Image (tube, rainbow, N blue to C red; front, side):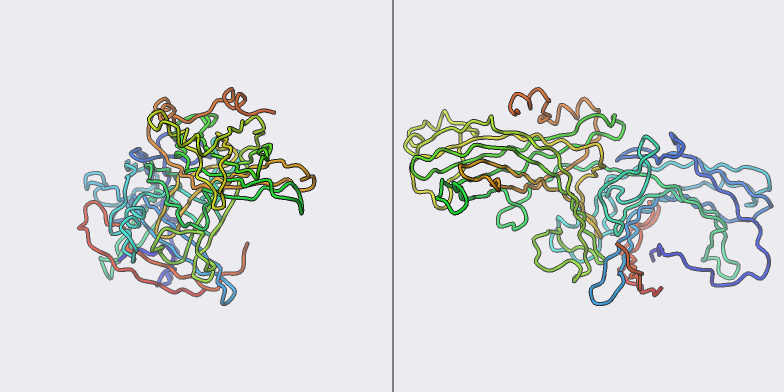
Length: 496
């Protein structure tokens, strides 16, 4: 049976004064004062647990555990308050040989005892971590990937500012190394209690591989193609039809944790434009392109059976789910220098398909196009992540998910439009991944990093009192030494 994350009081009341509890200090290799150690997939989490006591203390075992927990809170609609869920998805135990313990198992006052430990950050969780109903096998695969630390307040490398990973206070994924001095109950040897228990926070950002592009066909949230009527001004005649289209950009690959924060992580978005004129009208003069990165954190008090989406018309709060969005402006660039190229249907039909390339293929016509002449233009938009925010890789877990989208807004100028500047917008899915490579190989694998010279050449110019909490107590993963068994999923209701 899984260990509940909610602390509970002692079942018995000691009538004798208690001796001071053992003192535990956890020293991690590479620890810097005031900072939290960061690790990724395959890294070793090494350290020593130092234990001292003021008086002779009997004990039975030392428990050293690497633990991963996720917790969520969701506002209730029916009545004031929140419903919460907690899930222990990782529990690795450090084996300690009998020879490492003192004989007898008694700590002597004034003497220091050291217990070294070492964990390796896994790349996957055990299958029985995710036993809830699922709509497809891809969900189980995603939910058994190690999720990144999320929403757990900690200092940045400068030791002064907190990391802002754009997550709400209602969702958190945390990793700790926990050390406990345990003693068996005299009435029931199967029951142990902690004479002392200390935890040290760590940060884990696992490697995340590239996933296939999202199928946006029929998707009501993402907009990879947009058509808009271009008018000469308010209550004036139609100038033509504008079409903007783009595909999902290549993933943004976060640099390894050991890289300097000044390094730029980027990709590019390629937008194809098409203008279908009315008569002999000329295409509009392009203005500026504004790009924004939108971070979306989905969380719930029940496990997600499918990949979450903002296309669902049912409010999240009515189904025990929550959504937190935050947008960051990346850049606003002048694109007046982009050149329109004139085409005609007859020219396209005469073009030799052998000599054409992918970049030559124009955007498909609008639904109302019936003419012969049209214009095309192509924009390459650099997408660089700012250093003011912390971006975690795209992931999906049982209780929460993090996804990203890129919002592009293109303005253009038409005669007579003096008050409001018309625009056309797109919203593209963006995947952020991590790879454990050397910095040089990561940079070379990007293949889409745009230098400032190339850019210049192309462009110019929340909280109500908690009434109740539901704990989804999924059985913790077995230790490596235990037999793998399928746990039961149970709910525990606790009223505060």
